[in-house]
Structure formats: C-alpha cells, structure tokens
Amino acid sequence: MDSRRILARLLEDGWVEVRQRGSHLQLRHPRKPGLVTLPHPKRDVPLGTLRAIEKQSGLKLRREP
Figure (tube, one colour):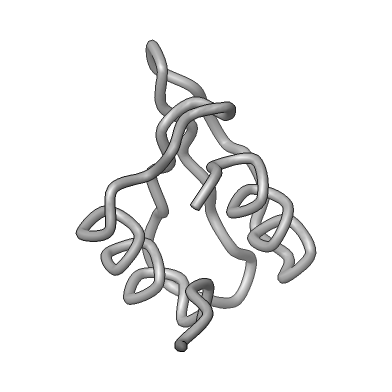
C-alpha cells in the first residue's frame, strides 16, 4: 500500500504530524496513546510495517480479499 494513502487515512482519523526525522513522519493522536511512525510518502510500505501501523493506530488499512 502506498504511504500517501496511509497518511491520508491517519489524518482523517485525527492523527497529527508532530515531527519528521529523515524519511519518517511521526504522528500523534489527541485521544489515543503512543506515536505512529510512517516512512516518507510515495513509497510502498512493506506488509509487516503496515500491520504495525494498524496495530499502533487502531485502524484497519488493508483490504482483505
């Protein structure tokens, strides 16, 4: 999945960019605990990274077949 789509979904859910270090964005939610780290936009995100982002954010980002 393209990281631009992931970033758009996270922003829609209320996540806010708090910092960028190199090629990674870090986002925080006002009511949910923790940070989500996302590789810089325009890259395909590996499945394991996508699963970790889903777990950290509480969102379902993948489409099941």
